[in-house]
Length: 343
Image (cartoon, rainbow, N blue to C red; front, side, top):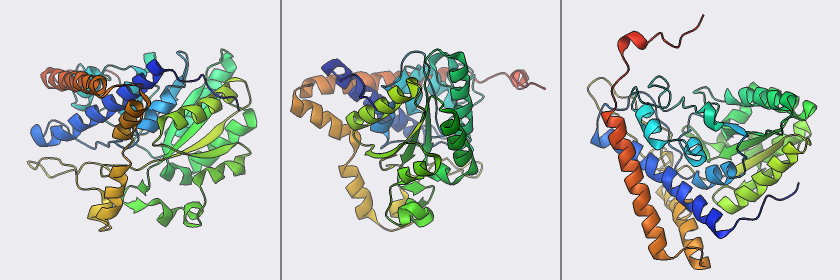
């Protein structure tokens, strides 16, 4: 697999800013549960800790390429350039939302930007992405599809069926398994035989005769280089690759669905609340990819501390504007409930 284009200073700074934008956006979502009780209804899942994996992967795509994500999906369209105001309004269920307030947090989509959607069903996006890759192969225009999913999805039949057909037909797709250490409230090694036996989960690629590689998903440069090589391989007609991107989810699995009149909230991380292992969580915080990448860029001279602070201030203002826009956006009219229903 050939390496992607080498990252220059501007691209590295862009990657840091996108990581920071994702983190700040999701912090604003989490704060909404406290500061504006009742504004967000239903499930919301955050991906703090996965910013490097998201940005490093999305940075490999060309303008014509496409991608699918899981229900933990806010970061991918943000890195691709989707308007955070429209995204926040969607999470708030408002008319001016990305999907007109119909999809909510778990069902974002921006097809005009190559983001073909998400699903609240574990592994459902894998066959969808594989179908999109088949369509791309038929069109013959050099498109590549990125398919993001969690490690838990690799135990679903849709995973095996999709990777099998993608390998058979040499489809232009890269499967990015984001292993964040937990399947909802269960540690990965408790429910995955490969992990329980000390193997990387990328070993699953062997069953489908495709390359499989495990990487540090907290390092955006490593992610960019690895996923970029897999994208180049797919684009040249050599078929799919499975990339296991390892990181640590820094928030709990999702918010608590509270009874009527009780505000929704995010609980503490499973390492603390279920396993009584605060030291595990503290160790994960020490490896937080966002401040780590900032420190790396400053140490290497790509950024000064003042420049990094300026970026952070700009990002905070941008995401506050997204919150304000979302709160001020009207709700969809009741009579529009069936507007996008087809028979």
